[in-house]
Length: 201
Ligand SMILES: Cc1cc2nc3c(=O)[nH]c(=O)nc-3n(C[C@H](O)[C@H](O)[C@H](O)COP(=O)(O)O)c2cc1C
Image: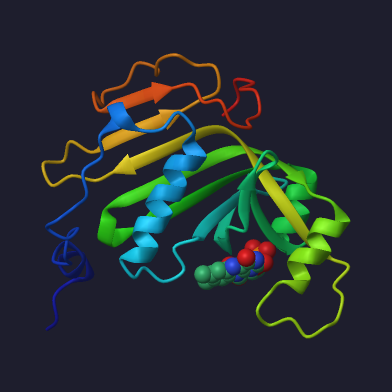
């Protein structure tokens, strides 16, 4: 008889031996710069689609759902992704414009979490994104929408074999993190685009 699923799961390999160091003290003040550095390291190491992330939205009854999307850019508007406005995520974002992104690079033992308010970018920017897709067939898609997550919190997580995982959190205007059982949590305010923390996370 084959091993139970639980045993199989417990036997799966952990992160690779050589995880990168993360010196929080020398992390850039701008989380977008740190994200770009981690993204480029993942790409250079051969990670496929390192710009893919899970996007979580919330439905009318408070039920979260998530799926993968591709990051399109980061600028003063926030962290861009695109989808059809008529999709489940599109209709959920129309009703409740808040979302969470989660990037994971297993070979680097790294995760980046972004939460915030979602804004719709312009029709021109959305059309340009649609036309810029690799599979562009020349047809318009009036439902295609470019969105941006304006972060209220961004967490960089670096796994370690000694389990002292590092959590480096950027929050606008917050000088130190909340009480936490994880001494590795370091919080700092960030200067980039963000939405105010209204208290409901
Ligand atoms: C790696 C990866 C990247 C994806 N990128 C996108 C994307 O950028 N935009 C999109 O609409 N769907 C993308 N998809 C498909 C979505 O995950 C999803 O299946 C689809 O958009 C429908 O989601 P919804 O019904 O929850 O709205 C991607 C899927 C994968 C696996």
